[in-house]
Image 1 (tube, rainbow, N blue to C red):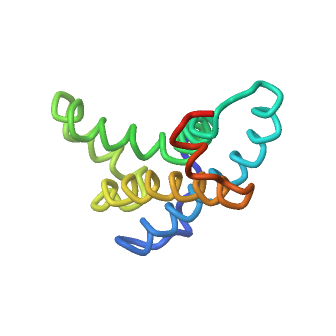
Image 2: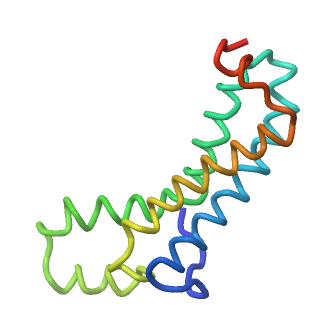
Length: 128
């Protein structure tokens, strides 16, 4: 899902901004999932994984789709269509960097949510 990225910076700054958005979304999702997961008996690792995957789906899926599209299927189509598609993407030169920071941000946000809730490393590794 693409969100409005026109206000974001370019290069590393834009990647860090996208990562911060992913971290904030993952943090909130972890806190929401914590309430639901206690009733369902989920392990902390399952909660972290689901929060991470949902955050990536909500914040990074548009950039990931563009990254895959431009690398694998764009060569088959016409040059004019490729130019139109590239014009719709914010900072196409650094899309890989933005995807990388979105993945890192989602993991950091979910991890911070786990720490704030009172995470226990032994319980996480045991899978209780």
